Every structure is written in structure tokens, then in C-alpha cells.
Length: 434
Image (cartoon, rainbow, N blue to C red):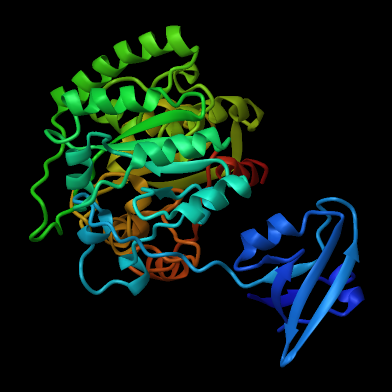
């Protein structure tokens, strides 16, 4: 059962007398346990809904257009917890004293379908696999890391073989599109283990459509955890060159590149950001794979529409993580500085909260931004631009700061721009149009 939170005004549900607080038991004799069940079974033209209202059960018969929304707002899904103990899990690398939500590990195929969360499939049951296929919950995003059994068990902190390849085969045969990721840990799942993983996954193409390779991230809070290390710069370079040979072979065989390195490999190795063709359909851009190329391409497309001067001097303080600073300056900031009277102070904020080995913008926290901007803010600047994804869905930085708190502390308006830079350009257009 799932409870109804509200009814849309003028909807079918309101007209036939369904009420907030009612519980949906079944639709067309199918049990309804969450919003996905409801969405799947309510698409038909003729549906019978069994409702529980207090101690009474009521049946409503509805005739409608196929896929027409009947107007129910239902309780949100509750995330399922992860039972793995991955040796590189970021949750274990958080400091003490944060919001309890930060320490929750999720493992929920429904959120993989809805929002692109990565799941390991280690504990997914047979009936859940059947549901995924039956309800066409596609695409899904799978954390593979390794297919060699002992290495995968080590990485997942598990004692059991989770039969990953059997599950992938079942889903692919059922028509589910999959995208895999490998968090690469030096000395563990690289080398021959990596080769085996790519070979094992390649057999499922085109059902398994892409593999993203992401370097492991380590914070300064890894107390009593499995000993891991970061890639050296020569190792990053070697991985770029090695995967490029693999990609060429795969391109000839599959007519797609199939495997894609995260932007972090290229930036930390001092290599140029790959061109658009490297990423095919940008399957895993939310995983940091092609994000910079997409941002650069969007900038180049929109930039010519900006006025090339401002009516009066304007100074922007642009906050970024250390990783992105050089790329932003080279591809974007230098072009924006050609706008007359526009001044940009690019600030690469060091991540003191997690440690300087964490250099991505999305993991910056409010207190670090404040500490490293407070002296600059006194000397000028009209607005502070904050990078995308620094806030959670509730509007908090990871350290529980809010944008309002940061604005009040700095005495400056702060704006979080979103990819693909659309919000940033709205701000700049307002400034240049004054």
C-alpha cells in the first residue's frame, strides 16, 4: 500500500472522489508498493483502483486516455540501505559530526532508474530482477569495479560471490539498458583484472552500453580503513594511453568507443580535454565523464550571443575546486574577460574539510569557501558564483552551511550556477544588459 498525499485540482481523481489520506492497495489487481508500481500500472486506458479509506475498502473504475495522469501525488520513495562495505566508499571517509543523512549508504535500483544512482546489484533478489524487466526500469547504472570474483569481493567488502554477470545477463536479455562504472584503485583492479572486467562486460554490448572509469578519491579522514593510494601522474598518463588503444579496437568492432575515462584523468595528467567525439552520447556525464567538454561546447555555442561590454565595471568572484581551475581559465574565463568592464576573480578553493587530495568542485563546503573568500570580499566583487552540485536537494552544503549563511557571512550575493552554464549566462546577460 502507498498513501496519497494530495490530489491535483480538476483531475480525474478529484472528480471521482479519491481523497488525500486514502491508501492505494491495488491497481488492476496488482499490489502497489511504491510510486513506480503506481506509474507502471496506472497507464492503461481502463484501470480499477482498490482504495483503503479508514476501515473501508473502495473500488474506483476509471476510463481514460492511455498514459493520462489521473492526478495523484504519492508518498516519496524511501531509499533502501546498502549492505556492502566497499573499501573506497566515500561515506566511510566523512568526518564525524555531520548530518546523519551524509552517513547513509544507499543501494536502490529504483533510484538508479529514476535519478541515475549507481547500484552494485549485490543484494538484488530474483523477484526484484523480474520486476525490473517486467516494469522496464531502464536504463540502470551499475557499479562493477571488477568482475574477477575475488577482487570484486575484496572491493565490495563481501564474503559471497554475488553472481554479478548472471544478473547482468538476465537484465540485458530482458531488454534493460545498462551503464557500468569502474572506480579504479591502483594495484587492485587495474592490470589483468581490468582487462578481464572489460572483456566480461563487452560481451553484453549493446545491452550494456558504456563503461565509465573513475579514479579512486580519498579524503584525509580514512582512519582504520583499507590502505589505498591515489594514482600518480605517470599512472594516469599510462591509463589514458592504454585505454585509447582499447577504445580503437572496440570502435572497429562495435562502432562505439564503449569505455570512457572521467575528466579527472586528463586534468590531473595535464592532458587536453578530449573533443566531443570521444564521448559518443555522453552516457555518464553525471559521473564526471565528459562534463568539461559539454561545458566548453555549450559555452562556445552561447558566448557569441552575449554583449561584449557592460555599461559599468562589474566584478565577479568565481569559485571553483582546484581540479577545474586551469580548465575554466583556459577555455572560458579568458574569453569572458574580453567583455569590456567585466572583471573575474577566479578562486580555486582548497578543500581543507576533506583534505587537498579532494579537488572536485562538487565536494566544496561552505566553511572552506568562506575562509578563503572573506578577505577578498572586503576588497570588492559584486557577486559570488558557486559551482554546480555543491548543494544537496535540501539546499545544504556537505558541512550543513546554506547559501544564505554564506551570503550573510561574506556580505555578498552568492549564486549557484547549473550546467550547462545556462544559469551563469542568465546572470551575465543581466549584468551586460544593464
